[in-house]
Length: 471
Image 1 (cartoon, one colour):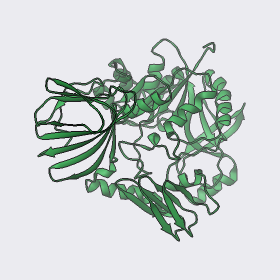
Image 2 (tube, helix red, strand yellow):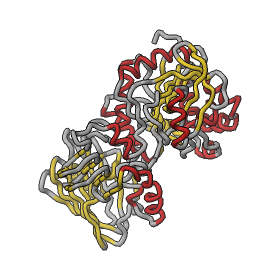
Image 3 (cartoon, rainbow, N blue to C red):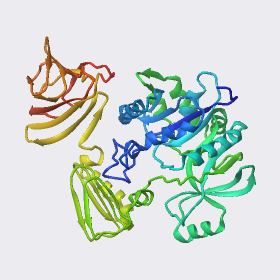
Image 4 (cartoon, rainbow, N blue to C red):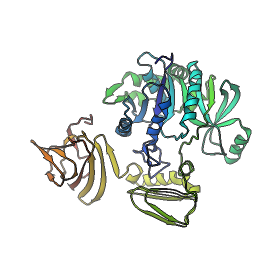
């Protein structure tokens, strides 16, 4: 690029929030969800960059989500390094890893740091704001984007602005989520903006600020970065060094301490989709203020958010309710009480319920599977293998498997044999026999797997070869 400080998008996708449970779960967070039935929030974030000249984006995510993130980028035709955090340490260390990687080739780009789970429908206003901010950030300022408040919101942090500074404002301080009276005072004053969590600065400017204010974070991240290694599409960092890093947000670590902070207004219909009520607010609605997704039939309802993922949801006379149905859970709450999903999920977690962490649909680099049914000594899965996908060469010591091809063509390794199965054909894999499954075709392969045995957990897998490095 010709600009002295090219734009380097840095997407933060490591969150594991459950405020949108049961859709969002620990191992399938909201950034990977298509909340309106179209593209996912992560894909929307990446597409938002289309109006800007930029370097290939860097993505930071966690170990559990890596193949999901890679697949969603692949669907957009993108291939760029995915930085894997060995553990969650909040935003300041995650951005430090991204800044170090951005400088690895000797450049000093302007980082555009964006959470992967926000909704910004007005992409033109976003592009204009970033373009204005690029010049400010290239000059060495630490830039944060503030959202003009439209209501006395108690669920967001705020930025208190000072004097005008070109197209932006100086920053007098960052404040935590206020109570209602304080939020109303902020709204009336006109001096406060919502904190969007979107930032721009040169990589060197951020690292210099971190060195000044939190050298412990910087040194731990530098040590972790020195031990980095490539693994397929991913960059892994030294785990021991990163685990020694304090957990801290960029707000606390840098932005609340530095003096060269500039806030640029971002008026682009932004939402962090932080609750079911916020999602209802941001979603298209009918004349009765209902947002209904999926197979929904409702009578006499008003102001509802109803999302049916897998079956018919019928409702009569509901008002201001949230009803979310998935294959393995149903959540029902008044919109005014959706914040209590946190304590609810905590209770489910304390009871050891798997629905907190996993969906019934489980995603793997080769495709996905759905646990259709299970009982004592049996488990039934519907498996989908994408074209070119291949399950690892493996064996089980405590279970046998029976595969029936429903659609497509399968190449099956069974011991020393390699067989080709078509629709309606089946094969039996006894206990202890080495086997593998591959889709050699150009359409998805679907099959039904019936497991039987004493241990049907994912722990009973002994891998001998895997094209995705999961050994």
